[in-house]
Figure 1 (cartoon, helix red, strand yellow):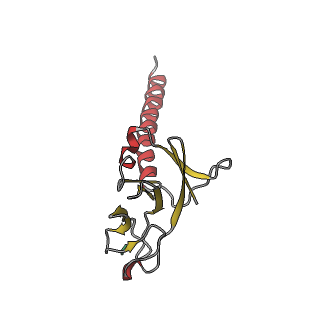
Figure 2 (cartoon, helix red, strand yellow):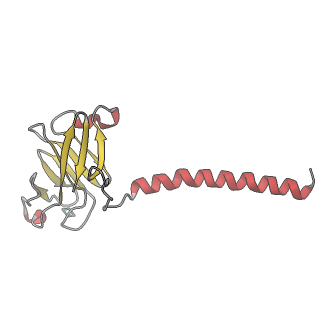
Figure 3 (cartoon, protein in one colour):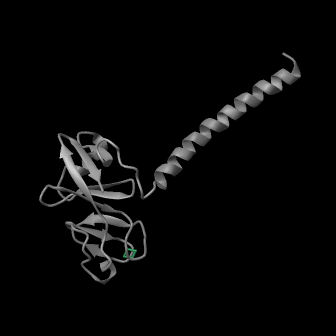
Length: 144
Ligand code: FES
């Protein structure tokens, strides 16, 4: 192999390696900064679905459990129903809303919201965006 050809082949391999390492890093970054606005599925209207039989959704098996996907807090309330709300707090837009004691709660400054998004204290007075949920078998759909 001539020197020029050798350098060309090394260059292609290096470019490939960089591409693959970038793809891994980029997908993590996208997961971390998932957009607040998700395009609904044109057929079902679902923003996204969760398979409740999957181990990745085990937090939703028990009342009071929750998980956060696509900047949405999805929880199983104390009555065993699924509820969902934005993770972005209306107080100072921190992405710190969780589910606690059968209500949505922001860990930043303590804003509290009921299951309908109504503020329960001064920091929560602007309310919280609530999403719809519907269950079909083990598939939970989150809708606007
Ligand atoms: S940002 Fe949530 S309570 Fe302040």
